[in-house]
Length: 321
Image 1 (cartoon, helix red, strand yellow):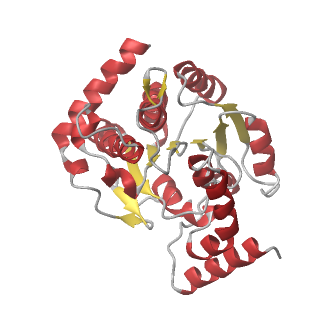
Image 2 (cartoon, rainbow, N blue to C red; image 1 turned 60 degrees about the horizontal axis):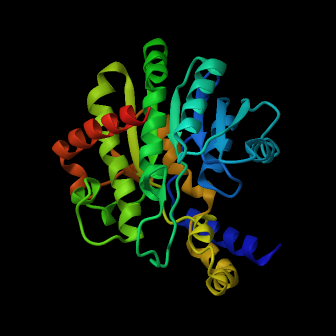
């Protein structure tokens, strides 16, 4: 067994010994879920795999070559698993978001759960002195927040129709404990000089606010919304964040077996997402960590900010679309 696989297995065994939390499998036959960002080795990949293994039809997305990722997913599923439907999605491209939403409605006509898993965390060494812009927006904001909200709002009518027909529908926003690095002032253009970690934190803080506003506005219609921290997970996201620094990329590869002992596997990291997506007892509007409700940052608990951000985001998306 390669060293990295051995150490990952050792880490899993230790965590199970001490009672790591996990989701309970459920019969999801007939249900349709959308999971964004399912590259092999990711939390999204393991989330989609579990939902399909439990019988759901799962629409899965990557920015490029989604069929390749779907084939890797199918190869790990039993013969009686639910269907996998791969589609391309680039959250930084408004037209791509619109195409994906239209395709889901046309091809399935039902959506029981939207799992907003895709996201980026770039410039881990804080080398950027100015924000990188895409589609006129800071790249973390456009990808992690604005693109995710655009997709959610485009699919909201389908989610609400599905909730009315089948009892409920869910939106699950995979955020991070690093939402605490963001600030309410930063959501509206305030705050100190540019820092990419603060920009990432702002994008995730905004999603926590959006989760609460979704629940407040649409909970009475059967929509349940959640935000969550998946844990410290060994995935490829750090490789992208260190891209362009060959020395640190090499060091990370060298220490990867040690990281695998202490960090969660993507399968373990998917458990909190699966609880929020499927557990009947999950509390709508809450922030989850370790498969349980947990306190989010103090800034995230300001309802007036949640409402203001929602209104301004709606206006921004209308102006763009």
